[in-house]
Amino acid sequence: MLITMIIRTSLLLSLLVALAALVHAVPTLRRRDADIESLYGITALRQDHSGKRGDNKQKYFHESTFHPHYDGRFAEKVLSYDDRRANLVVLMKTYLSAMHEIGTETWIMHGSLLGWWWNRKIMPWDSDVDVQVSEAGMDFLAAYHNMTIHHYQLPGEAKGRDYMLEINPHYVNGSTADRLNVIDARWIDTHTGLFIDITALRRDKEAEAEGKMGVMMCKDRHRYEEAQIFPLRDSFFEGIPVKIPYAYAELLEEEYGKKALTRINYQKHHFDEEKMEWIPLKGAKDESKKKPRPLNPKLRIRPGGGGSGSSVGTL
Ligand SMILES: *[C@@H]1O[C@H](CO)[C@@H](O)[C@H](O)[C@H]1NC(C)=O
Ligand SMILES: *[C@@H]1O[C@H](CO)[C@@H](O)[C@H](O)[C@H]1NC(C)=O
Image (cartoon, protein in one colour):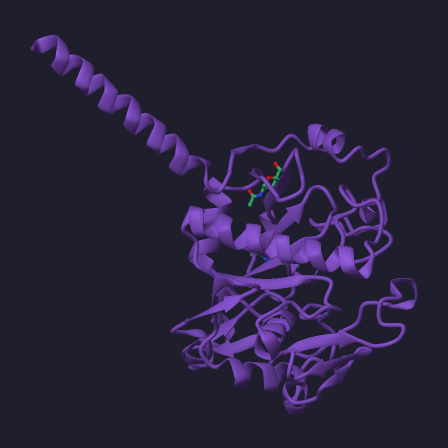
């Protein structure tokens, strides 16, 4: 009697253990501290393409020498149009999955939000993804998840791939004067060097000092009314659940102009309203001749927003 009970209990226990393992295995996420040297090994990188040596010493993140949307420690080359697009989609999915696991609320902004507006997808000519988190969210990521490596099993890739979350130590300096460190954190694909820029949405203390309440800002000099962002809305992006800011149309108009929401020919792409897809026109896939640039070079910054010249929010 006692023995059968013990056997039953141990059976139940092993079942539970197996179940727990299964739950843990989906999605395959493994965390450990990043060892940059070993990551170099993984990417089979022989040369560091980061612009580190040329960069100002105060600048924390170093983009590659050949393209500002690649991390030079991991990137070897600019990807082709199709490759980049496929990799950005996976980058987005792994990021959202990791933030969900970690429990940090995040939402899409800038070019990613514009892509969402059109067809809930990353725009095919976009070479990065832009997201925001709250300041408290950034504190949490910095305290517990800086330099963590997240391993994902990807379809068609036997070994899977490592993604790294890296927090800029200058994120604690909320001043827009810190122009070399406007990006607070990055989610980096250690295989391709592509990354997601993560910026913290902060209370605008300067505006508060002038008696204006409910004004939010990022170090990249974008300013928002709190009520434009919150409450966040639930939607889908690239087929997965995502949060978007409350007044998305207004935000997009402010940043890119009214036309960006209706113009169906852009960057050698035509928006096919039946297929709900941006169709590349002749020459659109020719990456070598293209320089990354913002959709609207003069970023619309609210009056009193502190000037222009920010290179963030580019497409
Ligand atoms: C994250 O880790 C890197 C590497 O150790 C370090 O240089 C950086 O200062 C850290 N960031 C924060 C916010 O502590
Ligand atoms: C923030 O960075 C700016 C630019 O480097 C610097 O002038 C300022 O003193 C920093 N503020 C703090 C609180 O460290």
